[in-house]
Image 1 (cartoon, rainbow, N blue to C red):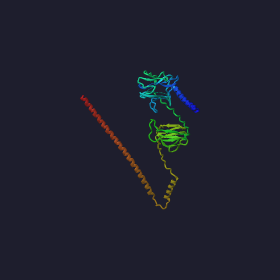
Image 2 (image 1 turned 45 degrees about the vertical axis):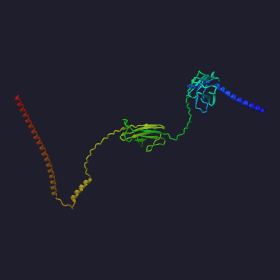
Image 3 (image 1 turned 30 degrees about the vertical axis):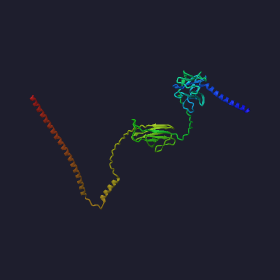
Length: 385
């Protein structure tokens, strides 16, 4: 007896709980969004849903199925931004989703069934014709009826949901690492140009602080605390440097530049043609002739020679008369030469004088003859006249 009471009590409790849950679920569904009217045989097919509350309801997570079979693809997923206003309608249109002779429509939110309705043979709602619909009367009530005048209220949903752009995941800010690279600066020497901005052909040498770098323009140098420039390893630290560019036939280009950390410098040398300075040629100075000055040594030599001539006993004896005659002959010969020279000059002058006189007489005679001929001609002309 006691066991029977316990069993009956337990069974009634379970049944009451199931009924309460089912009833509460249906009350909740009917209190919000329900399938309110549908027409499966029309073209297009359509289903009307209705908000039974005085509050706006979000349709985020809602899906409507047009087949009760699990895994069916005949469904429409509501966009997350869709909302239905209080006591308002929305329409879902489809093509060939619902069978004309009977089917089941299920409205879910996530995995929970919000509302469901079936029609066709053996159902409370029979098979419908194209000009018929099944609807709740009044709207939102549990009472269904077949209508020959479908109402079809509300906006038709497009189900074209906006694509949500995922927010970019912020990447961690990298911790700056201490660079081991030394601070530097650069200096670029471009091709040298002349006054007409034309590139100077040929090698142009580059000097830093008076030291030849071993390079020709164009060239780029790197400056740092212990840098060396060019093949000649010229010191290239930070600070002030004098840069010089040279080329044969041109004046050198020079500029002083203050090189500082992290900066880049660029220079284009302008070379001008160098004009050579004319140098004066020294005039040769006349060399004065110096007369020889008789020296005491020569005089002594002459005296010694005379003494030798006089006192030398081994020399042959000389006859004084013969020596005098010889000296006289020499003087006469010298005088004769002078005489002949004077005679030659005299005859030359006389010959020139004779030629001059003869020429004068000839030209004077010729002139008189021409004058006489002219006079005779004039007299003949007068006679003819």
